[in-house]
Length: 254
Image (cartoon, rainbow, N blue to C red; front, side, top):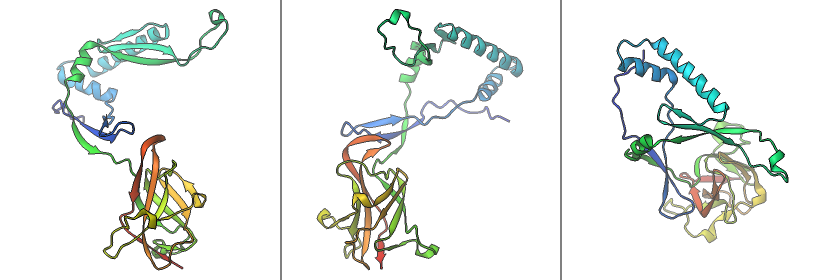
């Protein structure tokens, strides 16, 4: 049974992502939550006593049918005074004799009317989270380890697997680095002492998984943090490189 005793909330939440092209600027996104046709029908019936749900559903199907038919005829259809549905070609036409061409392939578009546009401009939203574009390392493991207890021990000259988010290495200043652990347990800040994984040692390079062979210059028995630096996020080139460092150091063994 549908719960219709819900207050109308206009103060919804958005997430912010740093803009790659403008400093101190964030892109706001509204999480997409879909209201189904069944839900709309339930609300119509709940707010209008005496209306038959199945009659409303049948009427909606008839209206939808007519809207589709009119759109296919090339008309812009005014949908319940909310906005206009119209069609447009998917791509341009290249031709020396355009008057003799036929255009194939159209897509649906939608433009809102002034009433809806005004109501949307008056809405206020809170921020639920600010997303971090830097690589996030959630797991480090030795993929060739036979025992589960040995997966967190990295073997010199063998391979390592990183799992997480935004891990894909891309860009001139990008790379995977081993950072020596200082006496107080923090990463070495002098990047000259970081050990970079040669690009040719990276065998798997995706957003969620990185695999690479350990550099031969690592000292066995020493502890290292692992850093991933990239200039790409979700296929978009970043203006500046971003770096993510593992929260837990690892030990390299023979």
